[in-house]
Image (cartoon, rainbow, N blue to C red; front, side, top):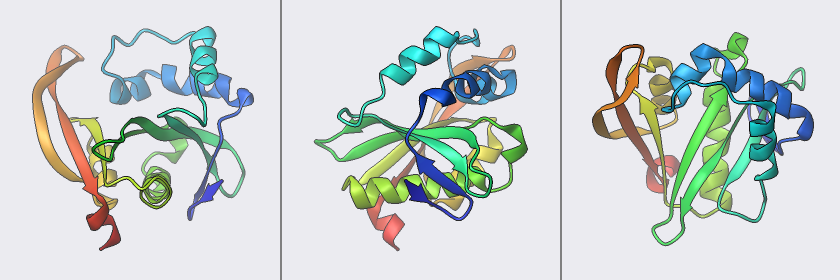
Length: 176
């Protein structure tokens, strides 16, 4: 477990599956997170995702838990690692809306960043975020991420096209 000011990052547990499914199937959450057609995930989809989690691969997934009440509120992790070039691609989901805009995501991201730089010896962390997700962009910037690029009109959502923003954080920027 890794502890921040508001959260703990711990392993995902089987009992998290139903909440994870509810979180990812929330229409607003899905709108902000996934570039795919917003078709709901089934319980079997979530079980398959859970079964694919392993400490021995190139993906590292954590449950985000409220430090005060020990409640599962979302997840984050490393989705891909390029070991040759020392780059990790990450993602985060705060599924419980009562926690949105209150610093829980930023705190979880800071703990995840520390884990990646200090435990995995990675040089760069990157992520993608949709241009209309202002709250996430501000959170990532608070953590030190910089906009590195913009893929124009990469996402069709709500009847129009939106940009996909690529953000990155270098180890040297983290330690400054």
